[in-house]
Image (cartoon, rainbow, N blue to C red):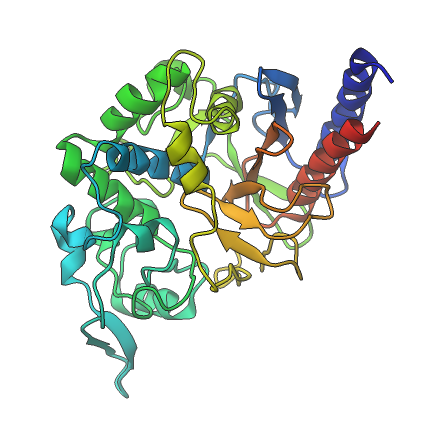
Length: 399
């Protein structure tokens, strides 16, 4: 099969996958998906509408709330500071973000329901933050954090306030992996070192070199008019537009864990940078040496675990590739074994709460991104469609 025929075959399959997602019994309103090699996008597709029942079609330049796909960009900014000798990943993070040094470990609840805390056994480092081993969680994945929110008024991380960062730790730093607000604190580390807001750091040091012109913490009118509507999945599979949903604008804090809005096309430029040893479309963002160091397993013997859906409106129980070992690099999850999609061992990837998914395969020089705006996370239609999309790409590479 010629490369042209191979590309045409994958394009046809991918178009059909997107179309099935918006026509399913429990459909998504709209989806944008792209795939890339080291040189540029090999597929760009969109299906459905930006809002269920609306008359504005989903297009490849649609703007999405990116949620946790923000995290890898924050990690990239931190790695730039490591390269410059301004950030020591093993130094106490409070050296750069003083507030993190005030946090205690949650040691249970007293009989009257009051949280009981104690000092941590060791300091939090920025490496702990990047690898999700600092002790932080999310209230939608952790019962203790959910109890702090419902019984003690702990602000949701989605409020983008400085107060929402001041959560107790769930365990002593370095003792296990738990997904949570670590990268929001890593963003505070970057701000503490640079003396600039995180969005300004991103704009100058990541977005400009990569040509990412549609990604920001604070969308302007140009981007807002292209933004997809969030949708809520009902228990019966129905979809309801959440017309009032938006991340706080302007946010009190630029949240390095989830706060960006952007397009899939912009994110593909970021994925290609990781495929190309840190080189962007215009200039280098990271050195090849930093990239090679960063993408290794930095969890040691710890492993990435499943995400339990504690708040059903925000997340189902979710896990990538159940039964397969998964580690964490500095910016991404690492699958330690070949995945059912064809993604090889050592490849990288992650996701965002509104069912956005991406992967970066440096071995084969390919990657992709699938974007919807539907809650809760782990949506069967969106997640299933993404896995089909990734599988189709690897099948095309075998032909």
